Image (tube, rainbow, N blue to C red; front, side, top):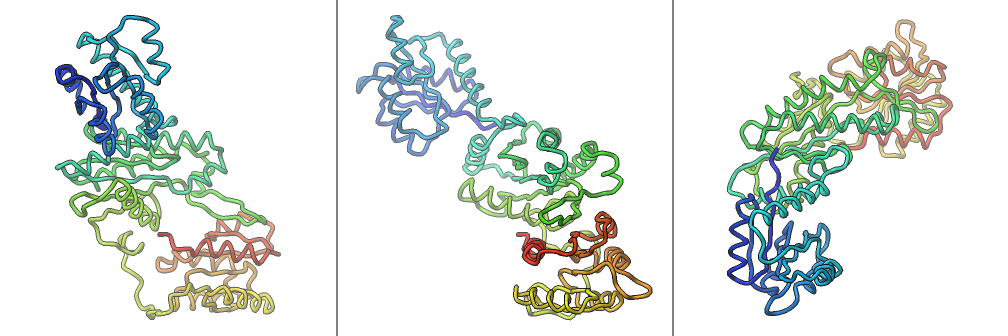
Length: 449
């Protein structure tokens, strides 16, 4: 797996600086050599070395004091400080550690010993900057990798990857089980990546890959397929057969939540010039949020046209629906109790929603096909002879043009899981608290990007 090129800064007399630079360049590091602390300070204003190798005695001052200065002024991650000391006096060397040096070596030193010791420090630094859960490169190494990509002449692509619905998974099975799922995602990314790809773990379930620009979409598709094939191992058989989890919120509100999937956002340096690593992270996350609009494990790239969820799934977009210029969310209330229907209509209208009300399942189905609301709030007990609330819920979810409408089932029926099995996205037990209902509806209708 590809890692950022280590950066080493050498501060020494001209001849020794050149000699040590030639030795350390053979380790694969990028080496900068200067002959004064003043030059070093100028470089440190923009350079972020992983290791500083400096002489204990320089014409302009004491290298130990410079170690002390670096510790006091350079923010994390601070470079490793290796002091080259010509004295064999033990007390002199101990004093160097007290001033802030991480290691003290002889000066001059055997070239092989120098290379091995520096590599050991760099290896330890890399381990300390890795994510403790996955052992993949953490935020600082990701930043370094992106900064090197930004100044490189080579094209690259970045993939932002995370898990959908991990919070509900953790609530259901525990954080330890969630950690195992996150580690599995890291293993999938590493397996799909080539030797010259970079895989980093930012935090929690947030990962970043940097790959070559040749067909990153194929790599993203492979990631989705591999993760979907192994993620089923992290569920009990009953939950796999049911096809969803049940999340219980305040007031007994129960929500049907899809099984874990992944979302991937892809950006390419060939499509846009990025100014900083923050720009790259922000852009990849924006496309990842777009991917979350679709069901299942999905990727969205900056090179593809933005499709509706229906077009993305290979279906024709909904036709025959009158164009709506009012951008407010539309809610259809299906409630046989006239007083409750009026209360819901007034409360939802005050929140800024466009509200329609009916007491009939048949009328509700016709209105849904005609106006395609954003959310339907329905009661299970309806008076229609041929269709009750359960049947209406199932019919809506089975209709290819209506299946993406949010369904909230408000019912006093004691079997809470029946509503979710019928296709409802949210179960609301009656009697319910109106502020809780409004909060849940607002959460469902909140824009996803």
